Image 1 (tube, rainbow, N blue to C red):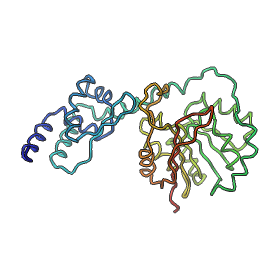
Image 2: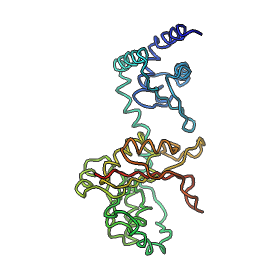
Image 3: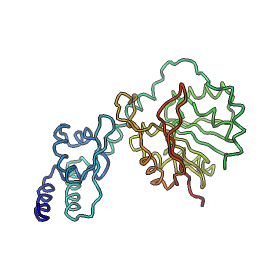
Image 4: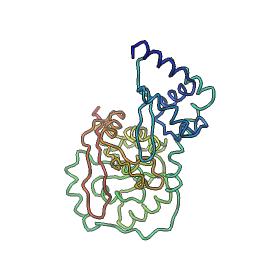
Length: 314
């Protein structure tokens, strides 16, 4: 086929209003087929049928997350495609679908919000490995700075006994009052006097102001938090802003899988590969210093990855 015929096919492809809308929406946010169907009030098979030619033309890229397919518009310098994008944005502004994108994205976290807000009756807190805690301070001199650590999404406080002996002050942050109550039980049982618990989110104003007042954290931990975040890159950005110059952000989360049976209640994402974790850190202007799988330990969680980024010194 000649270049002129290829160009003519592109004109025909982009001359369809529905495909222009789809391009514009996927340029705004990476969206699942189900989310596009909700935005445009169409069935998922219809969305798949309409996006397939765009994928074949290389205008849309697709990514699998379990049973979901997520679509994103590929960057381009083609003036024809840019014109179609502008027209698509105008159409989406007119029908209100562009304005509904944030609400659709926020809906991703609804299951997690309901799950973590439940004040369910649970078994007594069991402190595993408590006999090792007195020996943790021997690692403290190896840390470059240890004035303040922030555990984001602390949940029931599983990491607090590890951080408390290593840092002068530790903040445990979570948006679930029920889970913070369990964390308070844990810290009280262990006598972790340097731990304080905060209710809120990583981007909440009172959290940002408190960390600013303290000069920022030496370490911010996001342990199994990103899997529940509608926009994980924005969570990393918000966490990075809480670091002092030279501080470190540690991300612990699931390695990628296509096994839908491993999606836990409320979980938005099935995992992140090393390239995605590195991109999150770089977008937050952090230098990736270590990315890789955590070793499996009998009885512990499996298939976890650790990514560490450092905030440049001023």
